[in-house]
Image (cartoon, rainbow, N blue to C red; front, side):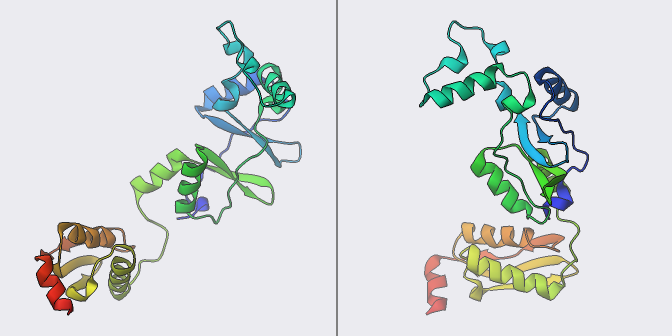
Length: 230
């Protein structure tokens, strides 16, 4: 599935000139950890997140203000002060926004979230927000399963399982056979280890169009398997 299939289309947004307290209340009301910032023409200008608000002056309880921590430069210290004391969203928001396209596949989105350490990203078309994808959206897509694509034929399912098992799962498929009937997969043949047996089962279970997997594969001593390949 792609971003357009899993994104939330009803998106709360804030304006750069909105007050920090009002923006924080909106985030609480919507129960969200981040909100896109849009300018007067509806274009994405930034993101306001819980992380942006954690260094606010209102949250300081110790003797040493958070914004007075050692900085690499005076410019960075000045920016930190503005982020802690600024009264408008534009003073606090993150301007370097990671946005995604409607056509981006969900596996690429999940990898980006993991690598960048983010929880949500706006979906943008021609510079305007059309939705938002969060970690919750990705989890829902896992829970619901793969939908929206045409169901592949049984022969296509078989060829996909064998190809993926050989190329991605290190399964020696010359000693394995796959039969498919109306999306129900039966795995036959011999492998050298339980890990190899599990690998082809998992390949089958993750193949589009598969409804059920019956694993009849036997585990033989590796010497026997090696002999059959000689």
